Amino acid sequence: MARLVINPDRKVSRINKEIYGHFSEHLGRCIYEGIYVGENSPIPNENGMRTDVVEALKKIQIPVLRWPGGCFADEYHWMDGIGPKESRKKMINTHWGGVIEDNSFGTHEFFELCRQLGCEAYVNGNLGSGTVQEMSEWVEYMTFDGLSPMSTMRKENGHEEPWNVRYFGVGNENWGCGGNMNPDYYANEYRRYQTYVRDYKHPDPSSGESSILKICSGPNVDDYEWTEDVLKTLYRHCDPRFHGHLDGLSLHYYVHPEGWQIKGSATDFDERVWYKTLAKAYFMDELVTKHSAIMDQYDPEKKVGLIVDEWGTWYTVEPGTNPGFLYQQNTIRDALVAGITLNIFNKHSDRVKMANIAQMINVLQSVILTEGADMILTPTYHVFDLYKVHQDADLVDSSIETEEIDLGDDRFGTGEGGRKITYHLPNLTESASVDADGVLHITVTNASADAAYPVETSIVGHAVKSVTAETVSGEMHEKNTFEEPEVVTVKPFDGVTVTEQGLSFTIPPCAVVRLDVELQ
Ligand code: AHR
Image (tube, rainbow, N blue to C red; front, side, top):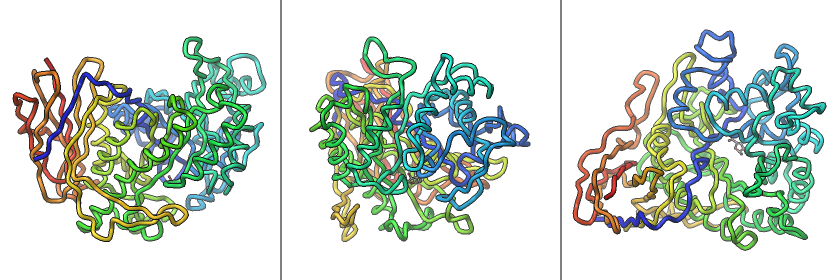
């Protein structure tokens, strides 16, 4: 029996809706086919965006979308993607399969997508192979309202009004594909480039917050030296936050069950690999804790967000598909990875201000897969659906008694730069929030492959008026396919009873559960 204790009156932090954000790169079939099919496609679309996909994404209330990469961002030259499509420059997508990128999806198309989705834009600039002028002019093109060369060009290309760029990334993975830089070199480049990322809409007069929030390219996995060295250089002689130079530091972490080289199949795995995968997902908790502790030394008031703008599973590609396209299936295992990770982000929402799962469609841990005119929703999609109630709610104090799952030798691993990692995996994870209507939402995951756990829940200071619950669960390999698209969906979860202390229920193995509780 596990005891879950929740104090709905102890509000800990706001769960930014952006924690439920997504990432879309010019990679494989994410943008092209996955979302953008062009105005003349027989697939139903609005201004080239697939209507089935847009409708599905709206249902999970995607709050923010990052684009155009990823590694692609640091070789993307935005001027190639504006103006008449037939005269747009074609380029080689060197990172992702060496295919021809025809630039038919560019800045105007991205903002049209954000408009249809009703989400914020997170544009990632090119620091690795672009110039300061190029980055500066892109921001002017997108956001300047007055008379200027770039705003005139935007108007000539058919968009009178400036767009809102809520988040702007100054480079991506600049320790790797974004230029193979050392941390102090990158940090100095960041200081220079971001200077010319102008806030043309002016800061919010009440908070002083810029209208365009700048995100610095942060560490890979457990590279704590990168975090430390970059921050040291950014904070030298100034407080970058105070001067509007820095609003977020990114973190990238992917779960490769069998390591970076081998990775492992998305669908064919045994119980040992199930646990190994989930333990690697749970490692996110240590990563966020340790990178946050370094950030605390520079920014004790937690004004700078940790932005986990790439996370998710990364398996071996599906047999017969282009290795550069990173197309993979998605099972109940991915649902657990999503549930565990989102609970971690909720619980660290004092520091984690945004997260973007990689990637939205047809790439890595997608929420949607497409095949021609067909579309399926993955188990990960259904977890985002289950958890959307946490968006912009208040995280409240909660804790759960857990048992450690025995990982055997799989508890040992190696991180960036050869650092030793000890993985561990609790059977259960949880997070709880109270929304604007006062409804308490509790999400619980059970990583056990075969054990169900009774959970006795105490709700401090309140009696329960009513409770409903839903789940994404099943046998660990279950998945949705184009032949059987509804094997894994959100299903009602019965068997929750109201007790004197709060609630009682038994969580089955391989399950993600959400309870919605009306309090007295
Ligand atoms: O998401 C795929 C790739 O993973 C991104 O382009 C890059 O930033 C990361 O290495």
